[in-house]
Length: 310
Image (cartoon, rainbow, N blue to C red; front, side, top):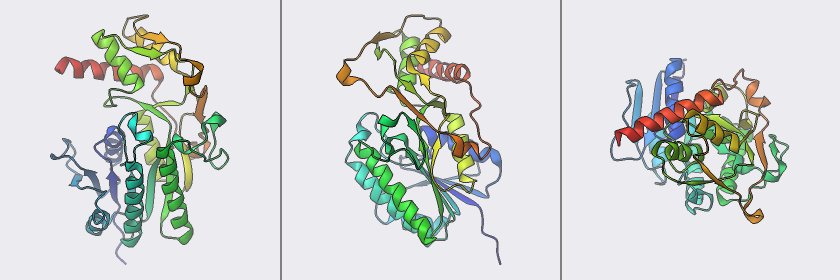
């Protein structure tokens, strides 16, 4: 019998997380082929000759089957979804991506796929619980985005029960690092510090589970090559006060007090504590390696380089 080739397919490969994930995968040297999907007019720039890019629109109903019939991946990491900052929570395209993801899973099973990794979200949980624990914390998301992500996770569970393929949903918490969208917290703070442009941030009293994007990419890979199934938190398990992140950035930029803060009204306050139980992923041997100081320094320097180019 001819052995099945280890072919990886990544959706959302040109994005913030996807680009780091591709770097992590290629460094292992364990894949005969790595394929990634993009939807821009030009092929993303990459120094990796082993990477094969495919321009494709996954929302087109025939694309998943046509693409997987051609590639026949043994493994698939699905990261493509609605990502427009702020707007994705209620974006009606979440339903389109849910349908497209189901078609992708069906095509994966039809063409002999073995292991499907879905990049899920902390938004799939009830945030009032504070500490998110797989299979314990209620899965009662409040946003349309969270409900759509959870619906696809449950579709994958059903396919697992039928024996179509092995799967897991890696639930991502809060991420930062180079190439992040400029409107997000760490990126916005870096830009404000570098340009001296005034921007008002919240007082930052809430605690969140933040992780550098390279540690996240390593966590996704550890999950991909593990036997774990179902929901798996990709989290540090150690929440950080948001105000501490802002303070650290001010210190690293040598600009204490530069970031303006304001107290939100009680009606606008977010949940005070939100972090993930991380023992399922830790069972693979994975752990975060990038310290907060190291990660914030790297991110601040990256934004400084980008803004100097401009």
